[in-house]
Length: 104
Image (cartoon, rainbow, N blue to C red; front, top):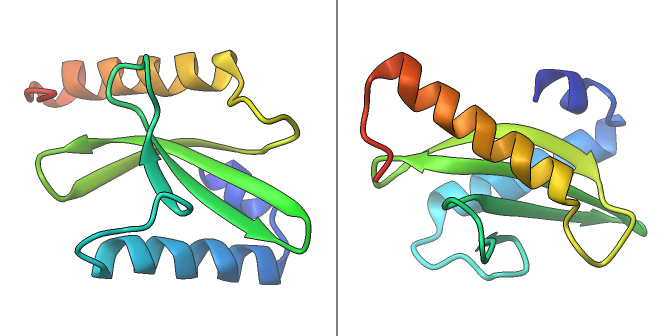
């Protein structure tokens, strides 16, 4: 995730930070910024748009409030790439294997 964030311009990184803060602070977050991806292992998508550029950050919940972000990418098509979803799901499995937690 850090490598992806390092590729963003200052304005892009600022918008990502703004959306993440919005998700943290709002009780009900609009789906234009944050939504669960269907047909996945509980993978959630953070959605960021700035000046025609669309970025997605994928992750999962550990508990009720902690979101673990796994990967990010610039979105070029309408559909979220399956490879990116598989990567997020693999990171989720690895995370819970390492921490010994429950992924529910």
